[in-house]
Image (spheres, rainbow, N blue to C red):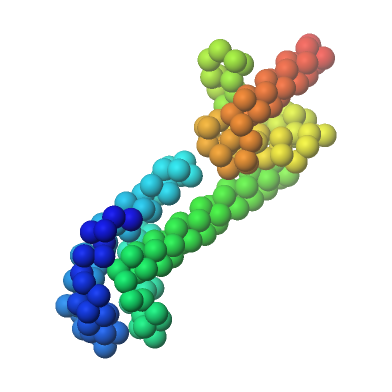
Length: 199
């Protein structure tokens, strides 16, 4: 955080926070305009670090500011601008992580349900080590490939089936991209053996 964040002056900032606590909308707008850009950059950087596509950081910073202004009783603890930046950016990051976890759980439930009910066909994105290829598999084939695999490998396959890239899968599962590619090659080999046996 640069010193510019604290350029209010301590007395000016304390007075501004007093006005914000009392419900002064002009003071709240001033606080937002002065500190908002710092928070936006922090949240955007954390978003990129987590490789989370499809999320708009502004959605989460706006929600965090709304939560902050809705809790005037908490504002007495903040005596410096950078403490507000740290608090609001953490709130925004927590909201981002919560949303990602909800999306992840929903995606996983949808994938598992579809496999169990044998209702859908999946498109599995596999990489044979040279070029990615899209393979359309029936539910029965997907079940056969997943059977007997460790839970981590099953999770990798389910995420690939749902359309995540290998880099995104590696980030979410907590493994290297090389591990994801190795699992993909193993699944491809299983499918080839299965096809040979059925020929």
